[in-house]
Image (cartoon, rainbow, N blue to C red):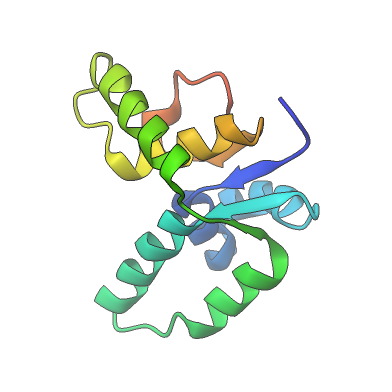
Length: 127
């Protein structure tokens, strides 16, 4: 894989918490090679909103410290095919995970995550 690291929602949450897992993510986020798919922004926004917490400062930090990967038609179509294949292995592999995975493959990047859905995926760096 290349030098880029796709940071998923799990990794961002742990980073913002300052947890031990967040410490493992720190180097990837602060490497200047971090990429955040826009679906991750949606997931984080939903999480912080449901908890009644402000997301604006976190979003500003993400935008400043990573490149945003916009969900385009090619990635969307690829994600649909990935979901179909991954569902053969894990019935609850979701479309958001498929978009994150498709983004990583498109960018020749690794996925930085703690999400168990990625345990068997060679491009994943599990924290």
